[in-house]
Length: 194
Image (cartoon, rainbow, N blue to C red; front, side, top):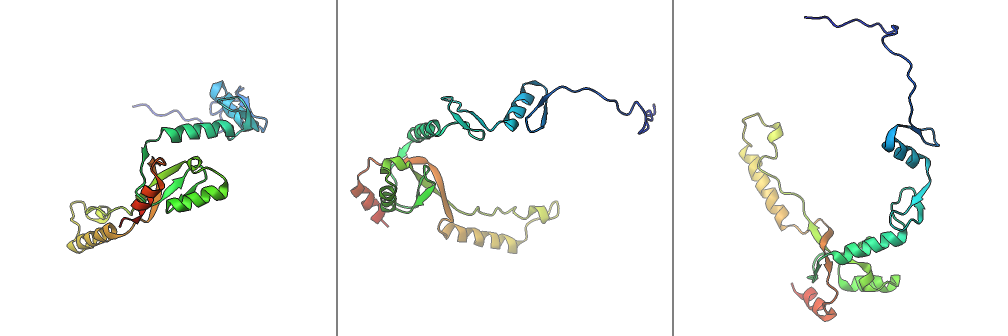
């Protein structure tokens, strides 16, 4: 069995001066050698960069200029599957980060902003509910092979039933674009259904 060699703090073996080469940004940040070091130093030292699509000058925190970003957003939106909105829940414009509770509200917003309704990129929202509790919810505080007490199981079941009867807590944009080819009258008929 060998013993570890003892090296004292002030020993020449403990440390030595080495010359290091690497990229340094204009702000003095040392980023190391190689391609990744160069990229990091250039990013830290720059204020602007080129749009990755068209080459226009943009702020360093942006990959695309506004025109290319808008075009990409349009392409992404138009590639979404379309679906008739059922008139329930919420719809959302990803262009202007705004939620609407009915189509009339979206139309008024469209008029006020001077944007055609189709230009709002309306998306059908998904309702968000609190998660149901599992019977093992308290497993972290139970003994290793312990069972959840019956009183807690009853409370969990009651809590879950309450959640199932509650309306959504919120909405988030879903995966379907609103099909605007459906007539306004058909939308109103849907909205009027209970």
